[in-house]
Image 1 (cartoon, helix red, strand yellow):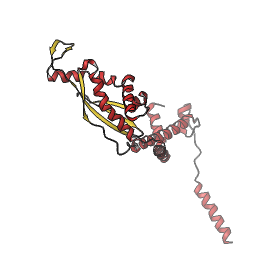
Image 2 (cartoon, rainbow, N blue to C red; image 1 turned 90 degrees about the vertical axis):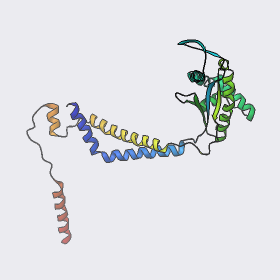
Image 3 (tube, helix red, strand yellow; image 1 turned 90 degrees about the horizontal axis):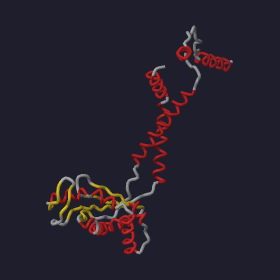
Image 4 (tube, one colour; image 1 turned 135 degrees about the vertical axis):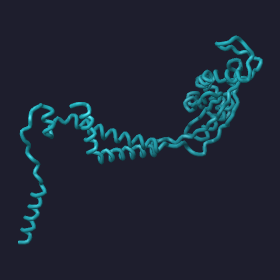
Length: 255
């Protein structure tokens, strides 16, 4: 059997089972909805956006393609953009997150760890700019806001003491306390459940057909053993016998 015939056979099989496939897909959708509604933890996010900039006009910077020269405003912006990847990696270090945790614990009289701060904070660099956003996501709206508010203070402090203070940061968009939880993503997760149910059912039918070695048609017999089929036993209609039995019962009832 060639590839096209195999594909056609599989498609024919799945088309015959389309009702069952839809049922499994709907079951998958329901399961995804149920687990999302009952086992997904609500989270709250607060974000703060920073602008990185070079601050000392008299400072000389070296570039791989040119000699030392006093930089212009455009060059300062280019330098800040060039250094963004370095600073973002700096903000992911345990040392930086420990500093944030220590200052936060001192202000709030808490005992948060650097690991907690690190896992709660994500950093997004806005491409081709010197802007970057830090988003704090936790299960508590107040905590997310407090950490983001602390980042507003700690990030500029750390940048002033790093790389001789050549690049500083200003807060362009302050943190706000989340008024509602983040979306649970019902649509996305239900769609995944729908597809998973559909794929599971299709895989089951295809696998069952592959391991079924029974010969069901004369065409399969000819294909598999390359022998001619002299004749087949026709399928007799059951309707006639069933109708005869029904008439017989009616006759007996009449008597």
